[in-house]
Every structure is written in C-alpha cells, then in structure tokens.
Length: 207
Image 1: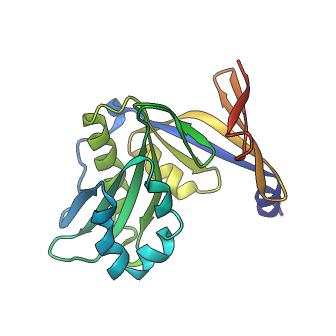
Image 2: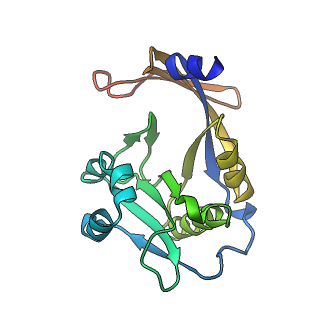
C-alpha cells in the first residue's frame, strides 16, 4: 500500500554529497578495470554489442547531446563485456536539470548506476562510486551529488559506506504519478521547486 501511495502521490529521496575526507584508500576490486567515456562515439560500440546496455539506455542517451557528461564503465581484465557502469552529468556554463534536481555550474550529478546481475555482490558498485568521485574531484568539480530513494536501502548503504553524506532531503509531490512539486529540506532551509516543461523547474520559494 505504501509503495502504491509513493508511486502515485509522494516519494522521499536523499540527496547525497561526496565528502573527500570520508573515503578509505582501498578503491579497486582486483581483476577489474575502469574506463571513462565522454563522447557519444565512444558509446557506439556498447550500443551495438550490448543489448542490455542498449535497452536500459536507449531513451536516456538523447539527453547527452546537449550536456557534458562522463560514463564510467567497469569490466573484468581481459574481457570486453561490461560488469557495470555509472553516469556523471556535469554542470558547466549554466545550470542543467535532471531527475528533478538542478545541477549548478562546476557541480556533478551521478546517476543511472547499474551492475550486471552476475557481477553483483563483488563490491563493484562501491568501486565505481569511489573511482568516479575521485576522478571528478581531480577535474575540479565543486560538489558531486547522487540521488537515492529512501526505499533503496542497498544503494543508500553503499554510498554512505563509500564516503558520501546526506546533504538534503527531497520530497517529490505527485498527482497520479506525475511530479508537480519538489521540496528540498536542509538544516532548517527549505526550497520549493515547481516541476514540468511549462514551468522549467522554477524555484517558487526559498529560505
């Protein structure tokens, strides 16, 4: 019943922020390599050979034409098939919006992490989290965020264990599954964002 209500009317999410001092030095899973892709031509090979990647990203890839981004992929050494991946959307000259969140210039939003089923429970997600955040920090990204739904306890734990902290809480208010209002709460500060193309995710209240 709660899941139905969340889907139709209400959803609670955590906006997590990378804290460099929190992560441990052990980053990599032995026997795996990470590549960083940053152009659509780099993804062509994945789209043509990996049906799972294609099906999961077909509608999302069109969002990459007008923004700067990175795609972190992980695979076993000596193998071409993917074990997992993680996107970063980068704010540059002006703020951009994704998943009802505004990415400010010089910030980054991590999104769409996926570990292929047979590679799960090996620590690869944590490896991707730490590697990508360190990489983006070296690119001088001021703030690096990720959004985790309250119900996704495994992802929340992995991110917190990997050096992220809860920066703010986000409540999505819906009308029969359509997001209309996004409420951000952070240490007694409140921001209301009205959603949709008509309003261009406009801030209507801020303290």
